Length: 485
Image 1 (cartoon, rainbow, N blue to C red):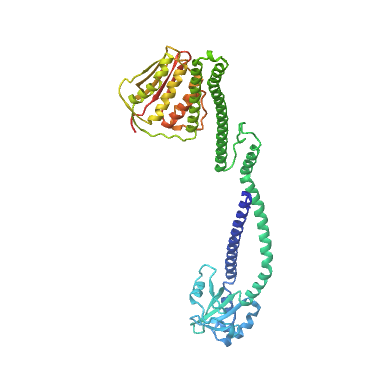
Image 2: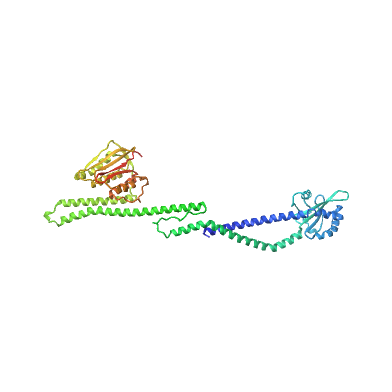
């Protein structure tokens, strides 16, 4: 019963049976109406002929004694007719039955007058032997020898005996008729509905088969339903929606693969970044240990300490990146003075830049404010400057300036370092150009931990970034600033 075909079949069969019962009842009523019309039309002048051929009735005599003599002349008509004489007001005077059988002693004269006036048949008149039944009849006006209206001759067509025999025969034949008719109708309905339902549910069946076949195919293949299904508009739309969902599933599966590959590559890149300072740290310590006590130079310990600090910084950045990707860091936006922010960044990197022989030039063309989280923006600038220091040679320059660009205020970080290749630039751009659609599930660019953190922080602050870089020449990162809430 859970299958669509079965449910449609049973519902349609029930509706067909109800329609059949209604049709049967209508045919029965129509048959009875036609039978009454034919019977009454055939016996239209029966009462008039009976009154004409009987000597007593033809003289307008309506008494019971006179009518009983006439009844013998009409026995040839059979038991299907009941004969009554009525006075001019419709009161029953004489009849061919026992007294106890007469239940109604007055007949509706209006119907008799309509009959005599030739109204459309069939007309149903009062049945003296019943209180609530009406039957077809024939009637004639009786005129006495003085030419006065003395009453009516009233003949019921299909009397009580006729009804009794008809009911008996119907009771015997009705089950056979009903059984044969219902059996034929059920067989016909079964064949018809099986054909129709098979036709209408064929697209659904085909769709179910195709979907079942798709289960055996790997998601990496081009999954799609093999054809456009013919049938109702709903089936066509359903197949289109399924194809659309299959395409989305494949795209998501491919995206997951790209993310996994990107994270794998990122871990390889990170392992190299961690391995370099760790190897240097261990190398300086081993060198210091194998030297004689009087030849041990404190510079080796300083180099080892520097490598340890680099390693510590990388591990701190890695923890920060994990916190960002897990959504544990949120922006606390407020109005921030850019001059104060750049002053803190410059103080942080000035000693290191001096030791490396790199010039820091942090200046603002005009005082300005931005609406941002000062701590997160400081992290972004710190990571950009730290990355620039790592790849800018001695004698190079790192600048931070503000400028108007495309009608917006931007903060640019420039360096004269090694620069980046175009694929590295695109890896950072595709994750930062549309921060409104930023997702923590996007793949990490192969730009090191620092720039990966920049990528995440830009998404939290919903800032755009534009990147220009050429290998051997340098890089420029321009961050769009928001001036108000």
